[in-house]
Amino acid sequence: MDYCTPAPANLPRIHGRGIPLLLGLVILGLPIGTIVALNSGGTSAIMHYSLRYSLVRNGLTPWNYVRFLDYCAERILLRKVGGGYAFIHRMLLDYFAARYVEASIGAEKPTRPSSIDREL
Image (cartoon, rainbow, N blue to C red):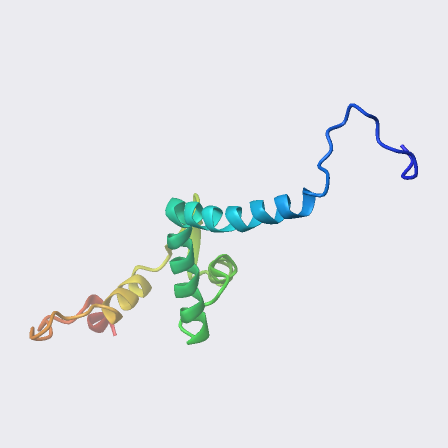
């Protein structure tokens, strides 16, 4: 169809109302779409990515976990097991587990040393 020829008579026409109608649908659709997206998991996604961004910005974690875990598997610190990863060395697992144990408020530190301290 050439742009210079008129449209066939059987096509519906909007006489001068096309732009305001479209603008009205956009103005109405954006807030409704945002509310629906936030109620169906959008809030969790925003919280997830803001936490990841905060951890990366503070240097506490890498942005690309898969590349980091594959790097550890290449260095024989981890091994791939199905869709996940597992520590190869039990001593390394115990070291990391003992390092991040948080004592409850007001409680004394455990008197028994961890297995990593006994092996060293």
